[in-house]
Length: 125
Image 1 (spheres, helix red, strand yellow):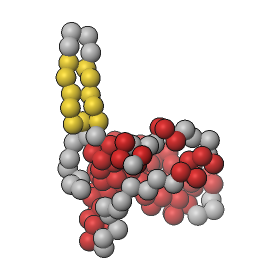
Image 2 (cartoon, helix red, strand yellow):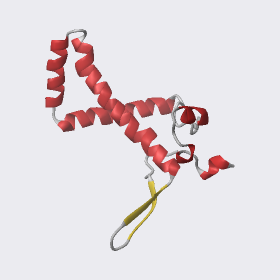
Image 3 (cartoon, helix red, strand yellow):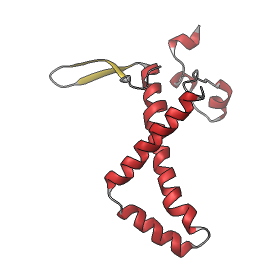
């Protein structure tokens, strides 16, 4: 799996529509190598700048929370991007990513989710 692959594998437009067909493996790569690590990076940024220094002091937490949101968006985005890149590099070096897709049918059913929303043609063989 290459983390740089695009998720849309086929697309076309007509007078009124943009139609994109997504390859499930490509979508998974985008989520695994970009979206999720980036969003976890936002959490790590907040944890480092708000949660850790505030301890149990709710007034300090509120002040740090306010200060966190006063930081420029570009600074917060750079932190999240850098965090994601570092974590994916580390996980790649240790062989923890990429990993095979996990389809836990019992867990999906227990959560009340529709299996057909998660089953690919390859899963049915």
